[in-house]
Amino acid sequence: MRIVKTIYEVRKAVKEWKREGLTVGLVPTMGYLHEGHKSLIERAVRENDRVVVSDFVNPTQFAPNEDFESYPRDIDADAALCESAGASLIFNPNAEEMYDNALTFVDMNKITKVLCGKTRPIHFSGVCTVVSKLFNIVAPDRAYFGEKDAQQLCVIRKMVKDLNFDIEIVGCPIIREADGLAKSSRNTYLNSEEREAALCLSRALNLGRKIITGGETNTETVVKAITAEIEKEPLAKIDYVEIVDFNTLERLDSVNKPVLCAAAVYIGKTRLIDNFIME
Ligand code: PAF
Image 1 (cartoon, protein in one colour):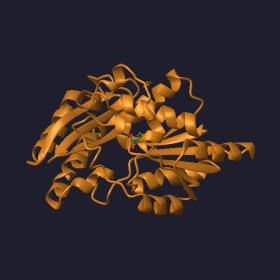
Image 2 (image 1 turned 90 degrees about the vertical axis):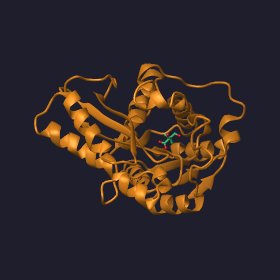
Image 3 (image 1 turned 180 degrees about the vertical axis):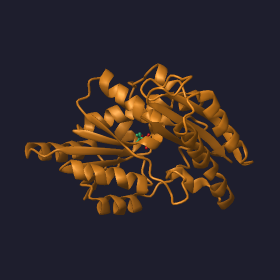
Image 4 (image 1 turned 30 degrees about the vertical axis):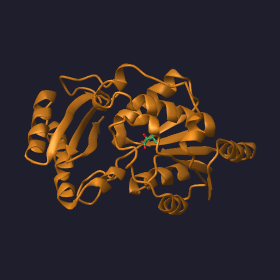
């Protein structure tokens, strides 16, 4: 496995693979890789001849008041994880290589303005821009994204359709710690008291899922129950709890089609997200 820093080197490697008739999978990441990323890479390795992992903390998806500077980085540990998962290449560019005074950005309406888009208004434009660039640089057959960022997955599927990228988007299930906390690079921000408090999120969503499975179809009732469960935790401050159509992200009154039940909660200064999808 190689680590490369330039677009030129990625394109050269991918062109050689394609000349040999090999298929290519892409796993876009911001590094500080954990078991969740590993599951994406392993799936990509199973389904493609070669796998590129991009490892780039993308500045354009962070607002000035967010954690771009403090976002954890560890390329050596990332390389070890990618190697053990069977990746072929890590693309680890710097911001200049990726943006080089760029004036062009990819933007999307509607589904980027709800849920996380309400408190992070520029976030999805940054995500769409960097993911489009990675798609153009790597030209993969398939790209892999985690369902933990369910809105991101929905936005990317829409972008691929709208901009006619010839790439299959593969969504992969959330990977959790043994106690239920969804794996996230941002979990490292939590001190031990906050780590314990953070469990309120998966606990509350599990309760919501149980209520729906038990036959409740009124979304307001379910959202109220989830909210009340999170509010039992004094360190938690809710950003949102919503039940939406998984394709359009429109708020639903009733659970009568595939739904995404998503929540974002601040535990101290750390903003955590989690969700469940019901087909
Ligand atoms: O999900 C992430 O880690 C990032 O948003 C992504 C897709 C790698 C774009 O920077």
